[in-house]
Length: 478
Image (tube, rainbow, N blue to C red):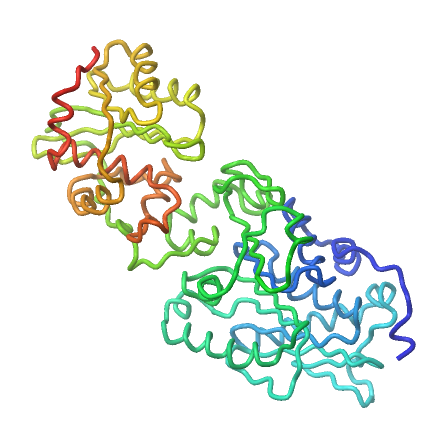
C-alpha cells in the first residue's frame, strides 16, 4: 500500500497521452478536449457529456487513455467502462491494461500497477476486470444490459451505448438502454461518483437526449463554467464536425471550419452530408432529430434542368431579424403551371454592408427579375441599397405582420407540392439545405427559421395568393 502512495510529479493529461502513446495524432481541438477530460479526471467535473463525430479520436481519449490516467492519479478508484457490447467494452479494458503494463506508464505512475499476464498472483486480471496491486482500485468493463451486482463504482465511462442507427432508431432498444442505465448504472454509484458519457449521437431520444429532457444539462462554452460546476448538473460539450454554432472559448473555430481538417476536410464532410443530411446532422454535428418530426424532411422535388415553359423570374429576400440570424435571398423561376424552380440562393449571417453587394451580384445575373424584400428590421434600407446597385430591376418591399409560426406550418404542404430544387442543391447551399432538411414541426425546437420563412413567402406570393393584395399596393422601383 505504501508503494502505491508514492509521490511522483503528475503530468497534465495531454502530456501523459503523448508520453504513453508515442506517435499520437491530434488536431487543434484535442487540446480543449483533453483539458476538459483532465478536469473530469481531477474531480473538477462530476458529470460530463461529450459528443464528437466518428473517427475523431473520441474513444482513444476518453475510454483508453483517461482510465489509465485516473488510476495513476488515484489507484484506489473503481472505474467501470460500458459500451453497447461486452466484447467492445472488454476491448477498451485490454487497451487500458496494455498502457498500464508499459515501462512508459510505470515511469510516470510507479505506484499503480496491475498483475502481469501469466504472473502468479492473488490479484485478478481478466478481459473484463483488472485489480490494482496493493490498492483497492479496479478497472471493470460491461456491455449494455450487463450486470454489475455487488460492485461499487466511483467512475462510470459510457462510450457508445448504441451500435448503429438501426439500434438507436429502435424504441425497444432505447427503452432497454434507459432501463439498464437507471437500474444498473445509477444504483452502483454513490454521492461522490463521477459519470462520463461520450457519444456519437444517433437519435434525439438516445440516452443523452433522455437525460437532457429530465435533468439539468448546461452546454460547456467557457472554462470558468468548470470552476462554477456545482456537482449536481451535467456539463455538455459538443464538437461539431463543421462549425455552425457561434464560436466559444472552448471551441473558437469560425463558421464553416472543420473540426479536424487534416483528417476530415471540408470537402470530405460535404460529401458525407450530401449522402444523408439527417444522418450527418446526428453523427457529425451532434444535433439529432427524428425523421417523423421533420416538417419537410428530404421530400423536396428535384429538377436537372429548367423547363422551356418559364414565364417569369423573381426573387424573395428576408433580411436578418437579429444579428445572429441569416439573410436569406432566393432567386427562382415560375413556369406556365405556376411550378417554382429555385435557381440561386444567398444564405449568410454577414452584415448588410456585405450581403447587399452579394445579393446584388446574384440579381445582376437574372435580368428582368422582380424582387420582393420583407422590410422588417432594416429590410427597406437593404432594398434601397440593392436598388442602387441593380437599377434595371423591379424591387419592392413590404412589412410581414402575420405570425411566422402559423405561416410556415400552414404552408408546408404548398411548399413541398410546388417548389423544386436543383439536384445538387445540398452541395451548392449546404447551410440553407441543412436548415430546411432538419426543420422540425415543433416550432420552438428550431434554431433558425429564415430558410423556411422565405420558401413560405414564395409559396404565398406565387401559389396561395395571400401576398397579392400587399404586393399590388407596392410601388416597385424600376
